[in-house]
Image (cartoon, rainbow, N blue to C red):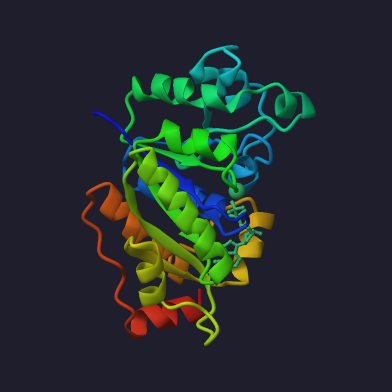
Length: 255
Ligand SMILES: Nc1ncnc2c1ncn2[C@@H]1O[C@H](COP(=O)(O)OP(=O)(O)O)[C@@H](O)[C@H]1O
Ligand SMILES: [Mg+2]
């Protein structure tokens, strides 16, 4: 099976890429697909924190430097999701050439995976460009505010120049405020479909503290259901969201 290789990128930082990647990875893995998530945020990595990966001896930084093999860098999460974390040391920060990332991803391409999701860095520097270059398709993450949408637009333009198709845009931290851009506004500005809207949620902070993405923390939470929907679409999985009937509501109240 040839893996779908998708990079999640944003332009602006802090919009929710790592949150999205960790949840999407678990959702796909729990649907039974061989899924791997890779931290390509080489300067300020934190995918490992989101997923509760312990300090790991072998990381993407080692792979980029040609040290060790890909299996040594794979942490197996309890959900069977494979995680390649990034190194946290200053040595790693200073001694890694992002342009070699594609070579690492091409090695993973040879392995038996259904879906590989790459967590990118913010900005449009060499690190982000390398993340776009390494993938076959792109998902853009943004918040519903103009600065993050304009940065997303730059990212889309660059992805287009690099001939990497943009699957769509995930709008995260939606507060339903009048001041926010609507789905229609965002689609008009970006010229790409919005594939998901995820609400602002205080519980996200608890997930980080618990090192457990929302999808495992609370499987029937709105954000979990939203991300499962995308995971099902990306992996051609038949899945229907739970009906929000009285039983569902009561179960959530008394859980
Ligand atoms: N939907 C959300 N509601 C509330 N907080 C969120 C949401 N999504 C992400 N966050 C928080 O925003 C911060 C940045 O998220 P992160 O996924 O690390 O962004 P990025 O990877 O784009 O830098 C984290 O503290 C995370 O908990
Ligand atoms: Mg991140």
